[in-house]
Length: 250
Image 1 (spheres, rainbow, N blue to C red):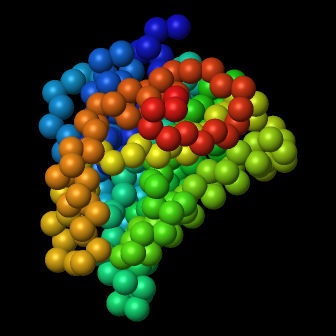
Image 2: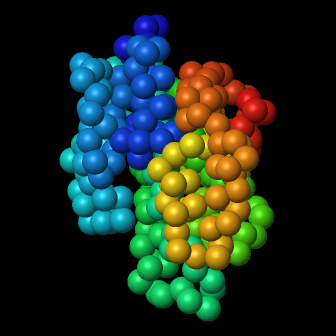
């Protein structure tokens, strides 16, 4: 098998961890499909991209029907990866200040889109093709941080959805039949030097202080470090159908 037989779909491909994952995959010979709002500005023959806002669920459904479902279904692939990396940081407000439309926007991008894409990947990938799914999580998924009710709850929901898919895979009772060659990782990358961190520490909010501290104390890691761990999972063979990892544990 050559790496040209492997394809990965990466959301949030234009910056941060997603962009680093794309570059790492391309360097290792994968075909990569990026999904983001802005171009990744990569001049690589093995890179293809679709520019949409994942919060626009009608546009996402159309992209799946017209492009992604046929891509997953293509039996020329020897390995398929999905990296649900795209996320919106939320609005850095206390629970009492949250507006319903703002919360719905966060949940659409951070929960609805990645859970839907997980289902699409499992449903359309032929059973004999190894499928690896990485859902980028956060410490906020398991630890309550003031001002992050919207973001934290969205990441907690995605974490549980990842665990649920793992349980469904182990049960063998999927609608399309048992799948034995699928592995899902919920991955928390730690505090990474990304545009999301810039947004968080620049927010006009008392809740931004921890993020200012992360930067001031030099705690942010380069996106290339977690990207390497994500790519190793995509390329690997895994007995467990669900794993949960934090940066430095893989």
